[in-house]
Image (cartoon, rainbow, N blue to C red; front, side):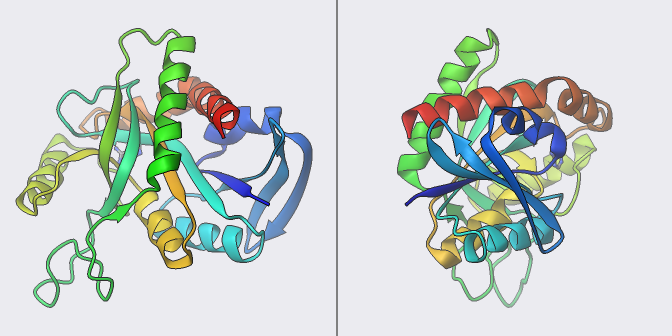
Length: 242
Ligand code: ADE
């Protein structure tokens, strides 16, 4: 039996999904409230990771070890840093890196020690479905200008809110041969937990800001007004494909 978790960082991102959940039932573990139920005939668990890599990692671990989840999809928002990644665009992750991981000179910068890995890849088949679902959702929500991207997302325990900092992250990753599209604060942690447990993982992020000097204004506005509708529409389409 497949049990799919839909994990979001913020309540606003989860709200629309919760309204759609059939036979909802709440459970509490490790300081988190989870919602069990059905979406389009599939067993699902809705969870809020809260913000940051530690909170996301513990939430993912609870989903897998306590709630029997064997597939995780993350939906949320991110700051666009790649060229042409604009507010309102959707980025589906191909893989994740931690932009604040640095155990150099003992290990190469960005490499996760003792894994011999810098990037954690998303599940290819689930990611393909998420791309299809996002394409349909963008068409349905009449986001004419919005573009769909697929590529590397970087996570770190910082809200990136200055153009200089955003450029710095981009430059450092490029020096390591990595071309980043967006930054957020949870995905790489969930990707690593899913790697540890052999659980398929995919992630979609809507661009709420450009991780620049305007980010602190753009982010809350987008989260309040747009994020929930996007998440709901993308997940509805994904569960039609699963
Ligand atoms: N999530 C959304 N926007 C972000 C930003 N600018 N930095 C980190 N995480 C984000």
